[in-house]
Length: 357
Ligand SMILES: [Zn+2]
Ligand SMILES: [Zn+2]
Image (cartoon, rainbow, N blue to C red; front, side, top):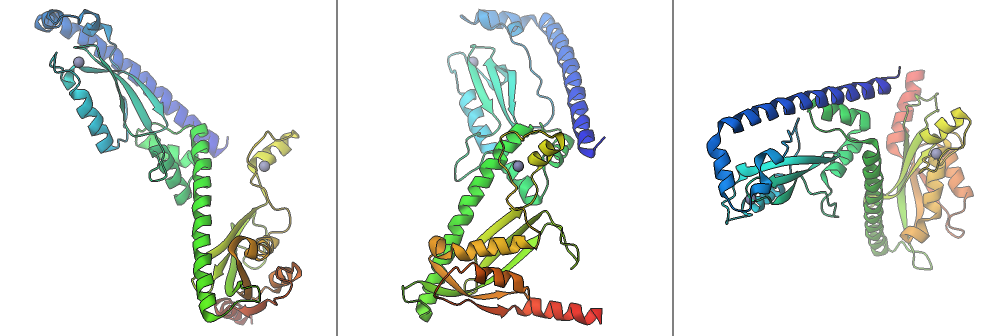
């Protein structure tokens, strides 16, 4: 049994245990309540004395016990409580007349259906605002965003929430929020890179580095990294990322990710079936080292179209194959691209070779 299966089973078992405990607690509470109501004759006569409240007899409303922990957006929750507490001056309704009838959970956000046992009014009380705006993500999106930033996935996240006795996040919701965050981050990254390009254009124009057509020419740094360390002999990483950075601003102008693996395609392959429609992450089929070349060539070829810039000087590591690929792609037919070796890489390689002696 895989670790993931084990984790899911543990979570399922915990949820089952929780609901069994919840059922028991609710039954016990109901019994106590009925007993108390039988004993407390004054409460019964008071309720009956209020005109029009016969349909809201205390016995007709099932008590719902909120089991476990919830995260609340405090001010949002507080404002709702104040509104609810002021709902009826006529009957002098107070907060302790309210009963929770139902809870609907959407990930970590809960929505409670509440009823006033005095006047019969119904309310909705939410733990957190579920509207996602550009300025503020909803709680579920924030939790998923935190998971991505810290490098954990859904299983780890649910381990944390289960340990805190919080509701767990369903796979579909996690996936939906994950895709939405990806689109937002992509748009934000593109905007940031466009601003960096504008900064580079201004600097290049003030230096007078422009070609005949008036396009700014700038020196750029480029480097890549992979999901797995090669230790100079094992280049088998399944994913790689590379970036082009403006030398003047030190800001990223182009970034690309290449993957040789997609879990959905791999699973379908194993079963010998066609994969069902999905957002495929596989976008590379060559060697792991060629990922860097593919991303940088793409950056150079699209530099005029996307950034209105010409990268005429490349500061990079000693790898000549990437430089060769860029030259072969002929991104700028009239402008030669010069290569300068990066001091950091030069010294690191020099040290590495010295150690081998
Ligand atoms: Zn009321
Ligand atoms: Zn795929």
